[in-house]
Image (cartoon, rainbow, N blue to C red; front, side, top):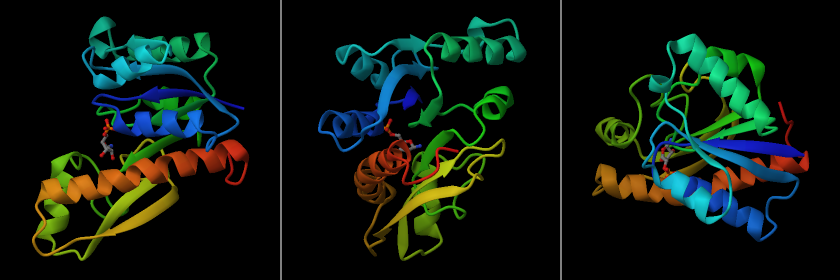
Length: 199
Ligand code: GRF
């Protein structure tokens, strides 16, 4: 059984899609134990509260130093019985201690076809601007396991979308986000069902 903590910083549409997939039985063998955000006003926390899922605001600024922050995060995850982490629009780096403690058991979704258009600074609209500037004919979404380095862990699932000549970063972002909402629940569902390895 996956006992999942979802980390996010923004509106939480991917989390919403995952929750919906659980409600309709497309994901079985998994529960959401906790939603955690570095941003106290993030929509993802509101979605959790409406669904009676524990929602916590945890920021590095609440701790005396980075080590305390990492240990605090580990403590919170243990208190909620978490054994798997899903990053859904989390804009902060996951501390190395967490990556080590949950080796292979942290997923992220990236709005491009990794290994292209990933790495530090490649987030939000910048990704889609870079894809269009490079003249790519295709983009997409990638679900991967999280390692210490940004966007570099093993790829779990990937889906393509076309890039059209008239695309703006916004129109491309919307097309990619729609397939993220399919791909992420599918990937989590396969891991929860044992079709893909947990780690
Ligand atoms: C998505 O585009 C995801 O790929 C990226 O951040 C965005 C999150 O959106 N990592 P939301 O908060 O799930 O709506």
